[in-house]
Amino acid sequence: RTARPHSATSSLVRGTRFRRFRPRRRTHPSGAARSLHPTHTMGLSKALRVAARGVSTSSAARMSLPALTTAQAKPSLMSAIFGGAAGPAMPPMDQPVPGLAIPDPPVAPATAPGTIVTTLSNGAKIASEDTNGASLAVGMYIAAGSKNENPYTTGAAHLLERMAFKATKHRTAFRVTREAEVIGANLLASASREQMAYTVDCLKTNLPEAVELLADTVMNPKLADHEVADVANALKAEMTELAANPANLMMEAVHAVAFDGGLGQPLVASAGALSRMDGDTLAHFVQQNYTAPRVVLAASGCAHEDLVAVAEPLLAQLPAGDASSATAPSKYVGGDYRVASDSPVANVVLAFEFAGGWKDTKASTAMTVLNTLMGGGGSFSAGGPGKGMYSRLYTRVLNKHAWAQNCTAFHSVFDDVGVVGISGVADGDRAGDMVKVMAHEMASVASGQITEEELARAKAATVSSILMNLESKAIVAEDIGRQILTYGERKAPAEFIAQVNALTVADVAAVAKKCVASKPTLCMVGDLSSAPRYETLKAMF
Image (cartoon, rainbow, N blue to C red; front, side):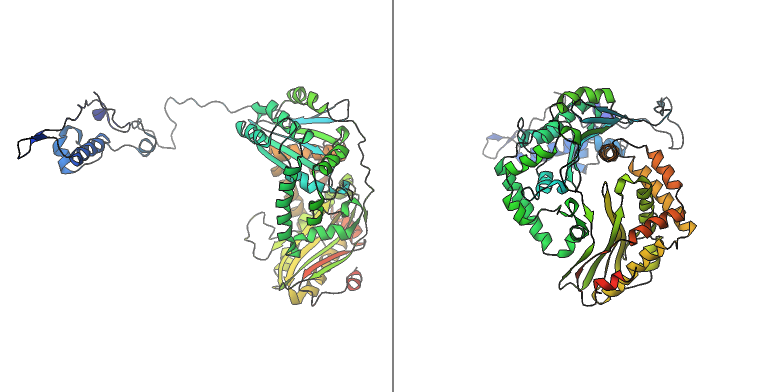
């Protein structure tokens, strides 16, 4: 027989023929013949294997196999790892490889891909943008959230987020998972106060499977009581842990204090609401809100005609209904919220009304730049480009006051209204100083104390953020879906960038001035021994 040598050996070893080793028989002193001891056989077999690999062996192995233990060329690192003989010598990395044909790069399109929208007879919309690449992002976006809940369905949006991609009327939960694994898909669901989102990321060759799986899980959830109970119990445990530290739910408190109406309802389900929840409750919420005029199927990375051919027969099954919700409009009211705890720090949020919401495109653009200009972050943040170390809240607050542990501008904006402001963390005995500093910073931008350099930097950072985010197909698909739900169309990024570049100091100051003219929302949690009264805060503006 010919033994198969290791693939990393040289041509000398490859051409050598091995004979099966037959153990030498020797005579026992008693006269009986017997074979060599098994350990001797194992030792020689090991010598054979070592020699076949071209590795230096012991002197005994060299004496037994002299032809195989001659000095050989050392195999390359790659051949030692992956096997195979060492290839031909390659030129230095700064020289082209002889005979290697480099394909031409793909031709960039002459114009940026546009968004194409198709409206079905029942009111559902299909939108897509055929961006280059091998991947695909597709999502279903529904104009429904916690603001659409009633006392009977409180907590439904949060629980539906956790129930996403579970069993449907046509698939078990295991089958949903297995089908997603087969096409290598990433599944994601998120709930907010105004919109629900279900997304799938995969290769564009799996467009039919991804769309069918997505539509089935969103439109036909089984919502079995035992599955709902299991998810609700797990979520209840998480909420109990969060409630142990009231600072974790500060933004929930901000919305509850700031708004009267749907936007003031909790997004995070309480333990009591989860205990009342069952499959029928969730099914009722889906039936009432997941109607065709409030659904958009958005995709990035596929041809529009291919998407419509797959999605139209699926979305045609959605019930027709009213595009607007029956929820009473939310009204900003403002107010005061505070919870004392044994924490050594004070968590503070100061917010104001942003009237108009996203539908006021000029004001929302100025608000976005204002938020970037204010910036901020944590006092222990590592610096570097893009970390906001140059922003006003860093240079004017964090770098000046050692007791300020965090100071960050934020916004929470919806279609028609929103809140903007500053959140911060300070030493417990400096809570009053933190509120004064926040109020001073909001008042200074409202009075126009903004330099052209600050504005130019904030505008450049905003444009950079827009363009970098839109490099992701998942974000492009989300942008398409959410814009169509808000505006009824998808505005091109160039339009937003042009609005950003056209902003002046007066535009940004006017938006800030209008915000601080509203009734403030003040939320504080922690050590409130030095916290100011709400009337004292109102007198600062």
